[in-house]
Image (cartoon, rainbow, N blue to C red; front, top):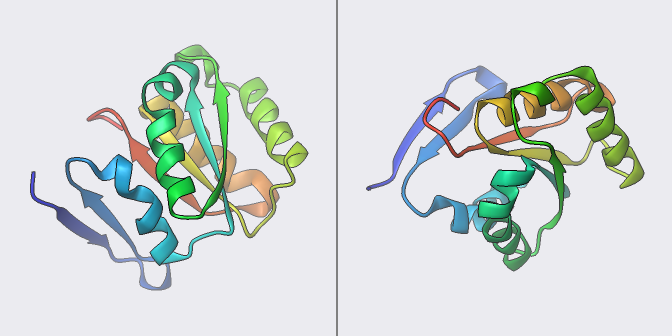
Length: 136
């Protein structure tokens, strides 16, 4: 698939949506070029992390980006405040701060959880969506 780029125009908060085959392996350099954060927390359910986590983490490492993979149990039942509390406690234990960002690696549940977590952690930190399903 040829690369398709869509810009969401929100003034100062505008951002690109990039769609193409093989993007997962190239995300490290793309994030490095954009200088979004000093460190990344990759949030994924245990199943998706097992399928794609190594590829994403390898791409980030190859680009010289510091990243931590943080997982939660798979499924809709993880969409609750206990999961948010566990993930935010993990971020705090790892020393994440406002200079850091989250990457949602997964489907709709992961995107919802990570988006909410990014919005409340330290009054809000950047968030990158890496969907693995069409609905995400």
